[in-house]
Image (cartoon, rainbow, N blue to C red):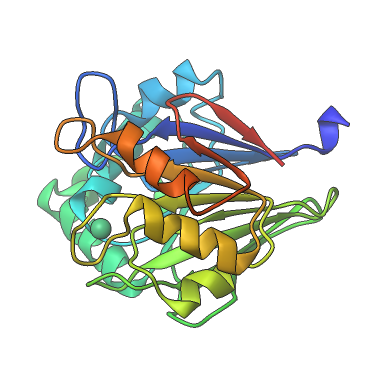
Length: 254
Ligand SMILES: [Zn+2]
């Protein structure tokens, strides 16, 4: 039933933003909860374009501190503030990512902005199956993945349907990724290509097979430095379930 459904709105898909793709970030909604996951360059416009309420966002989860995943945080906070949002705003992430966000905000002298949001930083330890957010509708846990900097992937369970969506964040192949993705109904797996700390389409497909995922969605691909169609075909030769490229503004229901 529709009201039981959790939705992940893809706000960006790219490893390198181009004319048609923003960097990878997404919005999760379930019941009254509405969270951003990572934060590309134009969060207010993308969230509104997706048909969601920007000022009702309940918080942000960041997977790691590489710029393509967090550079939008200052304008996210500033636009929330300009639109009248007050009170607390939680940001969850690995310690290092939270430190970098604090330093970014310090560079903008956020302490001098009157009546600014009270950002509460919640460190996610690099331990498998760490609870992040949980209510009667949904449970979000984090597990470390294999990237050159401290990085977490997310496992989101819709408690009402029992369905699971997993987002790997940036990672190369690793048993921890398979653990994170175990029996996922939707596995959103990065497929940057042959770069250290990242995955190819074949790597993503092997993780999907080993984890027994049902549907594989490839993300963090590049249309300007790679060939997403070739990445997709490569994955299809290995994973026999449904495989697709993530699309901007597509909604993944679970
Ligand atoms: Zn990265």
